[in-house]
Length: 220
Ligand SMILES: Nc1ncnc2c1ncn2[C@@H]1O[C@H](COP(=O)(O)OP(=O)(O)OP(=O)(O)O)[C@@H](O)[C@H]1O
Ligand SMILES: [Mg+2]
Image (cartoon, rainbow, N blue to C red):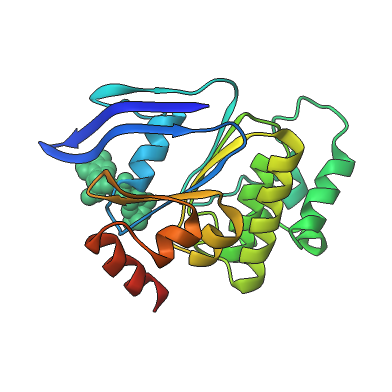
C-alpha cells in the first residue's frame, strides 16, 4: 500500500501540493487527473523519491519504477534500449515479446532516437514493463499516443498489473485511460484532492463544481 499523509510542497511560497491523506491499495490502478500545473508530476516525483516534500510523508514499500512525462531513448537500437541494465541475463525472448505487444517489433533494430513521439513513448514504457516492481508511477503515458497507441498502453499496463500484482499511480489527461485502465481516479486542483472515486462516477457525478467544469472541458 502507498500511504500519503499531510504532504506539502511549495515553490517560492506557493503551495503546489497539499494532500492531507491518500492511501492507494496493493494492486490498485489510480489515475491522477487535473489541469496543467495542478501538481500531478510533483506528486509522482515526490512519491518516487526523486524529490523531497517540505513536510508530511509518503510510505511506499518495494521497488518503484517511474516513467517521466518526457520520454527519452538511449543510443542504440530499440532492443539495445530494452536490454540495458538487465544484468546480462538472457532476456532476448522477453524483449521481442514486449516489443511485439507494443507493435514495435518491426522497428527492433532501428535507432531508438529516430522513433516518432508515439513510438518513443511506447518504447519508454516497454523499458519499465520488462522489469518487475511493486509500484509503477506513470506520468502521462499516452500523451503522444494515437487511439491505437493508447489502447496498447492500457492493455500492457493492465496485463503487467495482473502478472506482478503491483500498484500503479498514473497522471493522465485521457478520459479513455482513466475509464478503461484505472480502478480509481482523483482530480487535483492546486495540489489538493478535489474528487476521489471510481472513474465513471467521478466523471459523471463529480463531487465539486470545479471538478464538474474541468471534466466538461476535458471531454470536448
Ligand atoms: N522546479 C520548480 N520551480 C518552481 N515551480 C515549479 C517547479 N516545478 C513545478 N513547479 C510549479 O508547480 C506547479 C505544479 O507543477 P506540475 O509539473 O506538478 O504540474 P502538472 O499537474 O504535472 O502539469 P501538466 O499537466 O502541465 O504536466 C506548476 O505551477 C509549476 O509551474
Ligand atoms: Mg505534469
